[in-house]
Image (cartoon, rainbow, N blue to C red; front, side, top):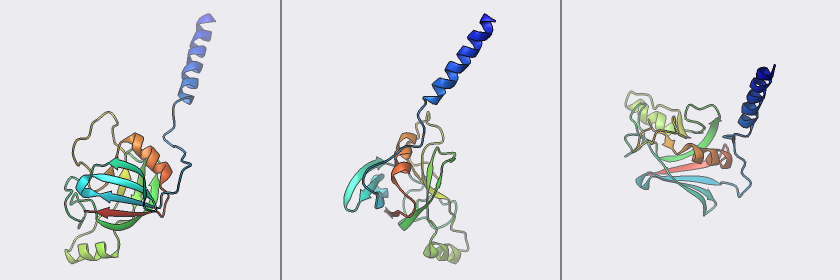
Length: 166
């Protein structure tokens, strides 16, 4: 009987300890993010409130970081004006915010090349937080650390414009 109580008590302690684990879903109670600016040339992303920078992050890009994304699989991160149009709380990259690529011009460019433009471009976290991703490694997405995407996910709402610059 004593052994059973010890086991049950230990199980309860582990369960209660897990309840104290922090959630990946954070709260944000600051100024609205009115835009996101990504400068590919210096690998930086800025969360903006009008003309004021609220947050600045180092980012990783597509493995072929120079130039605008033209077709599916080219490893480039798109350039231009898009919007944050969806969120994935169950992303295999921790959390992710969808970018509205491709737009009509992107589809036309790819069609002229006889190819598909691709899609599923996101701002996301890491697949493995223990792995230190060096260099640009995504297929065209914008990657940050898991801790950073938790904050970004809370701050940036669907419909927010994102300007991706060379």
